[in-house]
Every structure is written in C-alpha cells, then in structure tokens.
Amino acid sequence: MINRSHRFHGRGSLGYVYSHGKTVRTPQLAVRYNLNSRRRSYRLAVVVAKKVSKSAVVRNRIRRRIYEIVRHEAGAITKPFDIVITVFHVQVMAEEAASLQKTIHDLLDQAGIITKTS
Image (cartoon, rainbow, N blue to C red; front, side, top):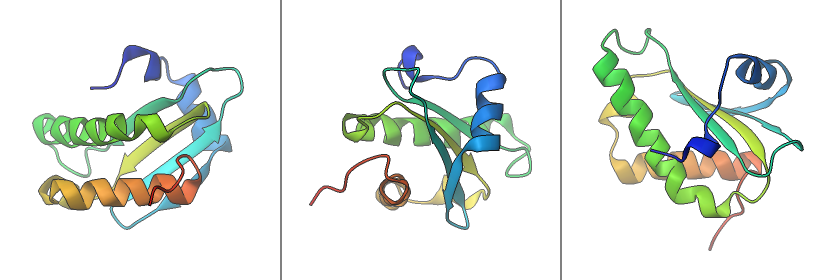
C-alpha cells in the first residue's frame, strides 16, 4: 500500500483530474494525470469498477497489485502529479506481475510522469 500522503482524499480532487487531466491508455488500463503545483509529491488513486468484477475481493486485489507496482516506481516520480489509474478489464487480475509492471511502467513513461530508465 502507498503512504497516506500519496492518496486522494475526497471526491473533488478526483473530479478535477477527470475533467482537466490528460489520458493514456491500453485496452485494460487507463492513466489519467494532471500536474498539481499546489502539492509537493504525487497523489494516486486506482479505480476498479463493478463492471470489472462484482466481487469486492477481486476489485481490491487488483487495486492492491497496482498500488504496489506504483510504490516501486515512486522514486522516478519527481513532479507532483495527480494520477488516477482506471481498470477496464478483469484480465488485469490474471496477468503476470512482470507483465503488469511493464504495462504500468510504459503508461507512466508515455504520460511523462516518470523518466525512462535504460
């Protein structure tokens, strides 16, 4: 799980990112992001809709997997971005950890949130 200082609080902030943010996506995931000059570090939310799975257990497991991957990438996030990762497909649950990590890393890199490491 990520640190409390890197989480969203309240719905207004998420609404702002949804209305003003930019998006990069794959068929399974989307990353919506916006630079927030009022903060010192990034904030992250992972949204998994009931359409993906009716089971809260499955949705929470997907959410925890993605939080853990971003937590490992946190050192490369230097600017105070507001980031919302939305999951569209239950296939994310069955995807291998290395493959999911590469997908999320590529999306964050494509968005310009992290810098590419060789």
